[in-house]
Image 1 (cartoon, rainbow, N blue to C red):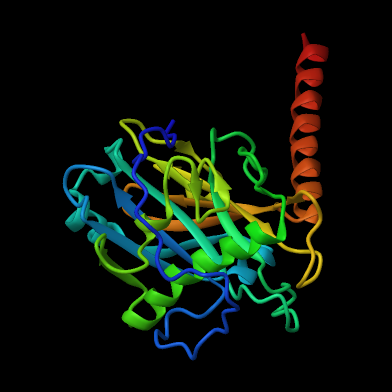
Image 2: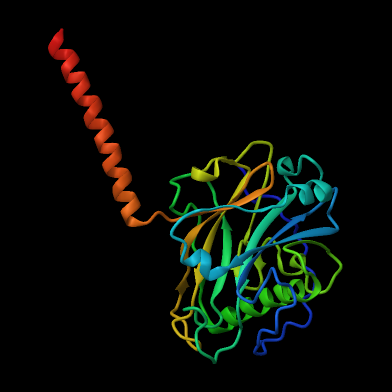
Length: 288
């Protein structure tokens, strides 16, 4: 099992993140747009500790509305191997997480059903558990100030990715402005998420996780939305949307919450198998 345990205790000073309303600029990166989920990898020591790996995963609302799994969204294996070594998935000092936000503004119409300042953020999955259900603590945001701060910090990172790169996967120096490492720590990531949005790796695989197969790490994705653009419930609890996974080949997948109809079908199928086995055993007993 791979848990987030040895994260760096250092937090760089955050610059240029005043709580002013952010209006998404015209996208420069055709692989990324405001509101998309950005995944990042960072090492706290050893090979690659001066380099981050960013991966664009697609719109937050596509995961919110997912009715099925997204398998092999991106393959980042070669980039992770080149940056952190061929055994990157066995390192206890390598971490990954994902976030997304469209705007930090308190005015304006919702975007694709999400009020502005809606946050998407992962939390480390603690066990395989039941696939399709969360195995982590939902994010809870208690004030408008914190909600705006979280959106502002996420946008500081994602806007730089959007403006500085043209690819879906990129490597970034930890000395660059508004990079992921600047906003993550052991205590409060993006000034909002207590305990951090990342999970780690280790000597053993995380486990077998549904359609994604055997994976090295897993992150539960939560959506935290204000009631309106200007108000939030207190506390505002995130909703579980599904789980991101990564395997040793570097394939990133998203395992969605099964639709109720799928659960019913699986239950009926399991019941039919059980009934057939029971009938078979009854026949054998009768013949003895």
